[in-house]
Image 1: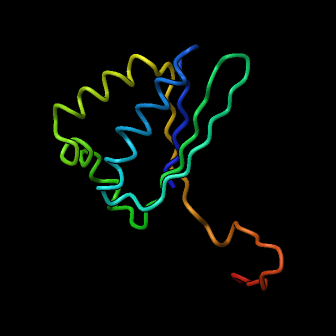
Image 2: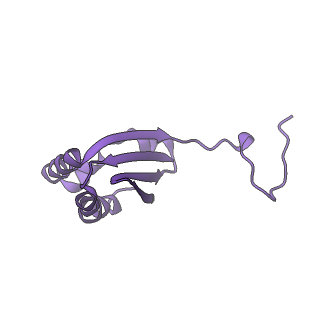
Length: 113
């Protein structure tokens, strides 16, 4: 999973929501992104957004340029200009599932010995 945390400047949440809903999501639906989870946390006027983008193969991470191709270079640049004016922080994290370090209640225990 590719986790993205974004902090939006104070007073920019509605504008950010509009860009995500009207430009980003429609473009993502045309790409190979199969899962996108989102949530917004607002505390003291500061909005943090957390997105989780699922992918099935590591090779999907090798093609970060799919959005400009999908949207068109000019539309992508305009969207990024809007976002760059609104975003004050971005953190990207890649999570990898490791079965031997994971626990699910009720699942049969397996031994790696």
